[in-house]
Length: 265
Ligand code: C5P
Image (cartoon, rainbow, N blue to C red; front, side):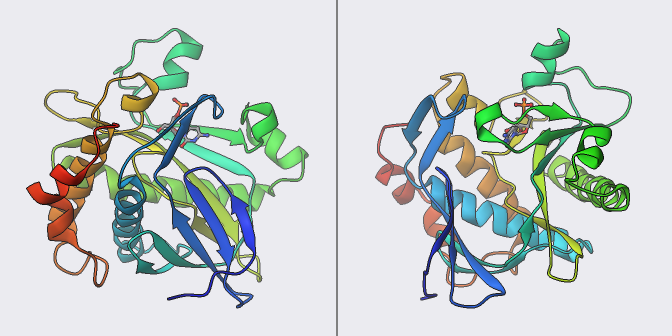
């Protein structure tokens, strides 16, 4: 068991702890879910385990595709050992299909496919509800340099180029996702944070069924089942070496596991 020291980030769905090593942190996924700047909240049984496993498998796939990430290994069903980075307070949102806030902001229909991928930058600030900014804001406010932003956009494009066909191959449309980056002590930029149905939209490519946090935001029910579907798709992509060591993959997908889930989602 990895030692948990001081709390570095006390989020609702993710908490980050020091480990005693200056180079490493412990990222812990919880069953809590929040939306609309934490006004709406609930507990989804097993979401922490599902999101940890989903994020682990996605980061493994990205590493295999040549993307350097903060992920080192999963150390328990809900915990990852990761490299400690200096957070860059920017969220990069990749949009392959119009949905969510972009549809609302621009009066567009959800499901519209833009002729090219759209990238949004948001300034990470809870008090301001993470406002959308552009390159000029990010550089002028000293958040990143032009050179760093070029690296971030390059990595983001490669991440999308890896994930989009992978999910398509298992019948899932990767509609949009949010990623974050950090700096290693030498200044190198790597992918940080997490990627899972809390931070991405996954639609069934055939039916359009949603398998992500929108089920919670929009009171659609079966939130846990949706996360379990994405977990199952990734297991089918990653098996056998993508499953975190000692992780009860069969148990997560079995009827027994499903029966154990409380009816709160
Ligand atoms: O809110 P919006 O529709 O712009 O979100 C686009 C994508 O980014 C969604 O997949 C959403 O879950 C994710 N996102 C996030 N964290 C935020 C804002 C958006 O994970 N603070």
